[in-house]
Amino acid sequence: MDFHTLAARGGRDVPSASRPLTPPIYQTNVYVFEDMDTVESVWESKKPGFVYGRYGTGNHAMLEDLVAALEGAEAAVACASGMGATTALLFGLFAPGDHLVSARDLYGSTAAFLGDEGRRLGVETDFVDATDVAAIVKALRPTTRAVFVEAMSNPLLRLVDVPALAPELARRGIELIVDASMASPAVFRPLEHGATMVMHSLTKFISGHGDVTGGLVAGRCPWRRASSGCPPCRASTIRACRRTHSTRSRRA
Ligand SMILES: Cc1ncc(COP(=O)(O)O)c(C=O)c1O
Image (cartoon, rainbow, N blue to C red; front, side, top):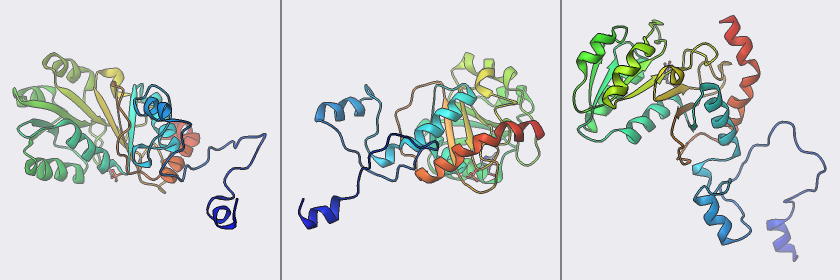
């Protein structure tokens, strides 16, 4: 290798008979493949692997697999924040003309976002008392695409009767999205009670140490890796917080 090539490409791989206990942070955007067939197989999810940083890295996948497993979900997508997860839901699920029924008791920024940005995008939202299943059912319309509630509302900690609400919506083909940020999956797993999607501000219970921002959407369908916006180092930090999760949920 000439000097200039060595300067640009040297110091890459070091042989090691051991592997790190804590997974490394994948500080990369692009990946190297053996051949074009492998590129295609990975791109089409026929083989495991990663293609491009925006679609996720090993750090994102480890965090997504962890929270999906804790929630009993088939798959999850990590986002840069809880509001990022709500944004992904709004853009991913709704089309102009769709109707949303939302809990009135919500984290303030979520309520403002669903109401204001939703309206701007042509999604009309009715805010109702979500502790009253009959009130939610009464607000449904033929165009209702989803119902959005917080499992335990922030800040009033009001509860929604998810097991009673879920069959009403399933019968009508309406998604039930539960923001479970304030409740640990150790105590409540919305998907087990009929919700179709669960989202988290990972900033809250899942990370729990007040030192990192993140979000996630999980559900029953296998999702292709999407734009995540969560840096790999943050995904790694949030995943590391799993070690204190049980202790924190027992003491909460
Ligand atoms: C219930 C709930 N959902 C969503 C969010 C937004 O999350 P983030 O601050 O990670 O964007 C919060 C933040 O406090 C929250 O309490």
